[in-house]
Amino acid sequence: MSPEMQIVVIALATGLTIGAFVWIARQQLIARWEQDCAWLAHAIWRFSPEPFDPKPYVAGYYIGAFLLLLFLLALVPSKIVGLVIWVVLILLPRMIIDRRWEKRRALIDEQLPATVLQMSSSVASGMSLVQALERLSERAPEPIRTEFRVITNHWRMGSDLSATIEEAKRRLRLQNFTLFSSAILINQRMGGNITQTLERLAHALESVERMRREVYSSTSEGRTNIKVLVVAPFIMLGIVAVMDLKAVMLLFQRPLGWILLGIAAVFTAVGTLWAWRIVNADV
Figure 1 (spheres, helix red, strand yellow):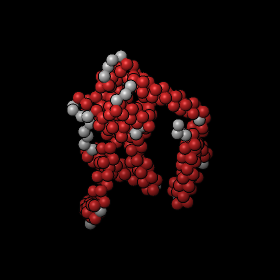
Figure 2 (cartoon, one colour):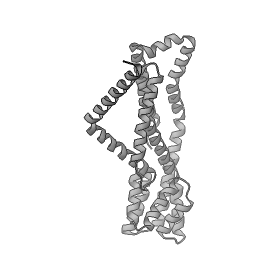
Figure 3 (tube, one colour):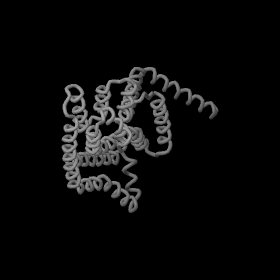
Figure 4 (cartoon, rainbow, N blue to C red):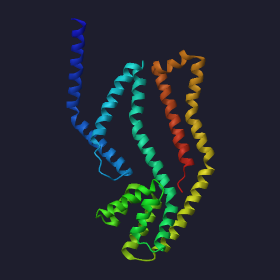
């Protein structure tokens, strides 16, 4: 059999194998597809509740992940190391999105006390509640301005104000924003002095934010130690590689080395998570 014919046979066998696998696992693959689409739609909804079709992006992600796997298997000498790198890289987009969302939530939580006080001043000057929200959607800093812009835009399109505020509360899942939204919703249903309520709420939120900053400042040394804990194994591995590269390569080429690397990774992860939970006390 000629080399060209061998390539054709191998390609056909590979294609048939992949096709058979897809057909056998089609139910699981469809469920995974729907799960990933739902997760991406929910992730984007947290940033903006505007309509979004996640299917093209999930399909592109699948294609990119498959091509990345082929590239790593062809490039990395150790197939197991290549698979580990592939798993880390395909999980990276989700980690980045979650990290960006947490940073956005933290910034909104930090901006909320001043925003509530500004809203209280607007209402005290004679504006209605909706007018005060519209003013915040124009003058408040980002990213909290986007949240108020979404609320006011939905209200202009005919949505109920209480429903849009409830949606923002579900999307953000911030304790301070829940207090703020509850104050507005109670005022909408039962009436009362909304100006005084917002002023008291703003001062309470400022006290909580001040306490949170004090805790953050007190635990700054601990966070620095965590970063050192994460980086130190890689630095030590690099130093040893400079002195004896062959010995380091055995860790990536032998099963015993893979086991040692796995144990080191587990201990580092457990220590990091444990220390992180200690220095990130909830206020």
